[in-house]
Length: 465
Image (cartoon, rainbow, N blue to C red; front, side, top):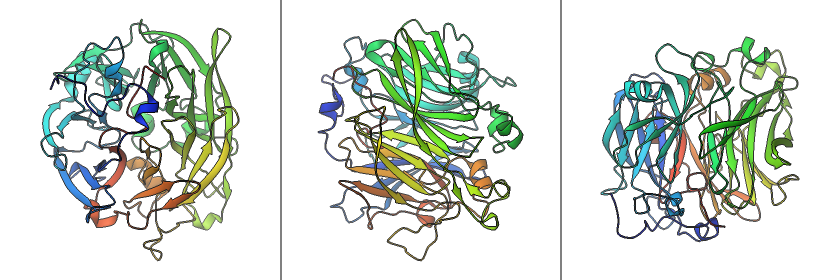
C-alpha cells in the first residue's frame, strides 16, 4: 500500500484541503437493529452530474451479524504529511469500520472498485481485548504514526476504563493501549488532537451497561453520565488535566478542534442539561498554564404537548434539542450543530470562537415537528439530523438520522426509519431536492455516520497552517 509519491487526497494544510475537488461518493454506515441481518457499508453517488446522483450505488454486507456499525474512518489521511510521520507514502485506501456492540473491527479496501469495498480483514473482539484491554470501539482517526481507535469499555466483564487503542498502519494489528498514564480518566467516548502542540483531548459518554439498553433515567437524573474533558500529553501519552463542565451538563460527546494547527481551541457538544433539558456547545482553550472550557452556545428545549412525546419525555412537556453531533468546516469558520430531538441542523459563524453567531438552519424530522423533506412533502420524517459531515470545500453538508439503536427506540418509539439528506451551504442553507436516499434505499437498515471519498471535515488532521 506504499506509494512513491504522497496520496493526492492528502493536503499539508487546511487551506490547501479546502481547494480539493468535490467528492463523488459517500460511504454510509448502515446497521440492522434486530441484529439478525448483516450490517453494511452503503455507497451513495454524490456527483451532481451523474444520473445516479443521490442514489445508493454500492453495498457491502459484512460477514457477521450484531455489529451495530456506528463511526468509522480512513486508514490514512493528511496527517501523513506531518514532518515526523514515519509513513508519508501510505494510501487513503482502507476504511476502518468498528462494530460498537460486537467489538469487531473490519478493514474494507476501496481501491479497486470504490463502489464495492471489499472486506480484507476482520479483527475479532478478542484481539482488541487481549492486546489493548478494550471493547466497544468507537472513533477512528488516522494518525501520523498509526491508526487510533477509541473504545467505550474494558475487556471481558470489565465496564472500564475505556480508552484508545493503536493499530498498525500496515497490518492493522492492534499494537496495544495508547495510554501510559491515564490519571483519573475512566469514561470514554471521542478523542482528537492538536498535533503540532502535542495535545490530545478526550470526552466522556458512559460505560457499556449505561448505554447499550438505552439511556437510563436514574443515571441521567443522578448525573452519572460523563461531564468532563481530559487533556493529554500526546507524545508522552500521559494524562495532564481533567476539566469538569459541571455535572448538570451530561454527555459531552463530539470533539472538533480547530483545523489550523497554530490555533489552540476546539468545540464540544453537550447532549443535555438535566436542569432544563437544554443542549449546549462549549469551546476549550488554553488559559495561562491550564486548559479551560467556556459555554458559548445554549439551545433551549421546545415546549410540547405531552401527548405527542415518547413516555420518557412526557413528564417534562418539552422536547430536548439533544445535540448529538457537531462538525467544523475545514476553514474553521462554520460550526454545524445537529439537534436530533427537535429535528434541526443549525449553523454558526465561529470566526470568533467565543462569540458564535447563528447563521441559518434547516428542519428535518424531529420528535414532534416531523418535518418532511421537500422532495417528499407528504412524508413525515422520524429521527432528525444526527451525524453531520461537511465537504472539504465547505459547500455541502450531509446528514443522517439514526443515533444509536436503543436510543432511537426510546426517543422515536414508532420507528426512526432511515434517511440521508444533502444541505447546500451558501449564504443560506438549502436542502437538495434531488438528494434524499431513504427508506427501502437502505434495505431496512438504519444509517449513521457518513465518510466522503477523498476525505472530509472530520477525517483529516494537518501540521501546517
